[in-house]
Image (tube, rainbow, N blue to C red; front, side, top):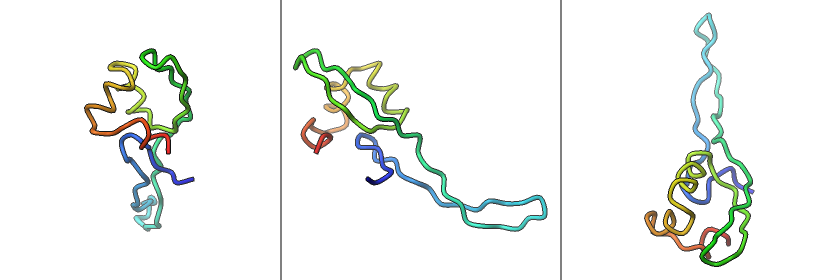
Length: 80
C-alpha cells in the first residue's frame, strides 16, 4: 500500500538530514497517515479510509461528502 493520502494526494517528501558538522544524508519525510472509520449520515454507512490528518480535520469540519464534492472526487474513487 502506497504511503499516500487518498483524499489530498499527499505523499513522502525527500530531503537531507544535516548533521552538526554539516554532513548531508538522504532522508524521507512521510505524511501523517491514519486509518479511520468515517460515518456518512446521508448514506447511513461507515467507510474505512487511509487519510492524512489534514484531510481528517477538513472532513470533521465539512463532512465527507461535502469535502469530496469540493475536491472534485467521488466516494467510489476514494474507496477503490
